[in-house]
Length: 253
Image (cartoon, rainbow, N blue to C red; front, side, top):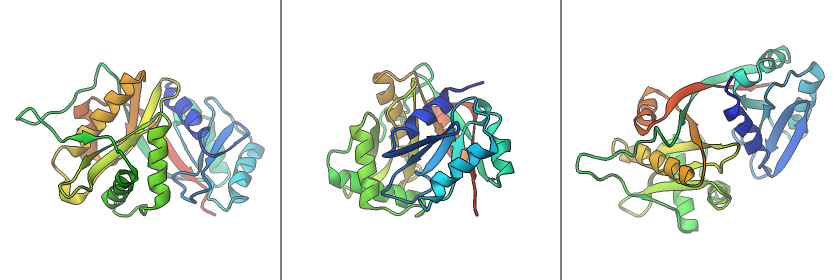
């Protein structure tokens, strides 16, 4: 059983501005947004919740006007999924996650020995353009906003990292962020490239740069999820390897 990623999920949610712990679950809330991708819960490894435990968790979401939603590695808490299904939760998705270690990391290079120049955001304008680029990269799945740019800045300033490749006009061509390490690992997320700049190695360069940064800071591993076979191939070239799955599950009504 691989509980490292699940232990990280618990520690990461405890960093949210508002944290509720009930019945073996940790729920993390950010009052600046109602996004279910930011406001969600996860179980402690090994949790075997009762119906009352699940009901208490649902109440924590309902009283804030939020959709009850969880993300977790089911192998680390095998009794949780059945308890949630009994309470009416339905599966949104199951994603495989990949893990990179210092021994497997490969920094990509182009045939001329170079690659896209990866930068560290220097000011509010950089964080704003990165947030806008990622919104475009993900087809408007989330809108760019001052709050989104502020979250990126908090990530950079709180032990995590944000990296990007600048477009010729000074904006962002593509970027990503990585959380601060916890329990020896950290999550790399939001890897996105604007459509006009795809196929230039930007995602691989940013992923490798972020991973190397976190290894330099003492992380033993970096993990991420991929959205399709194309992105999986990019991450595998950088040194990420399959390790397990994560379940996304929510109560819709």
